[in-house]
Image 1: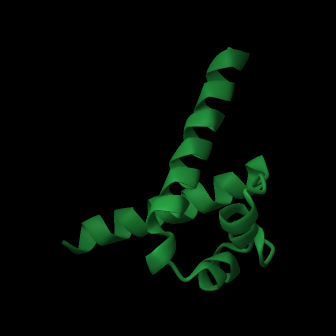
Image 2: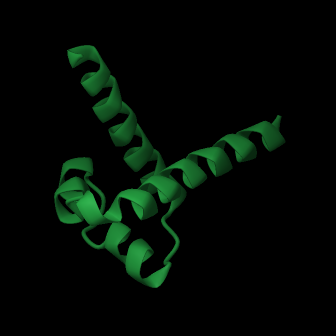
Length: 76
């Protein structure tokens, strides 16, 4: 059971990290950090210095992105 939880965390981390790297040129990183409520510089440090983002912050970012895309899909 613990293995499945780890794989879900790993999957979530990979999804968030890949999104941030891929979309870096078009993202307002500071605005996202403020909206999500993570410390300023969390995502910027990951993108520029390859710093690790803590699991709780990965969860917040993932939830934020999920909600954005769900809202976008509803409006279509």
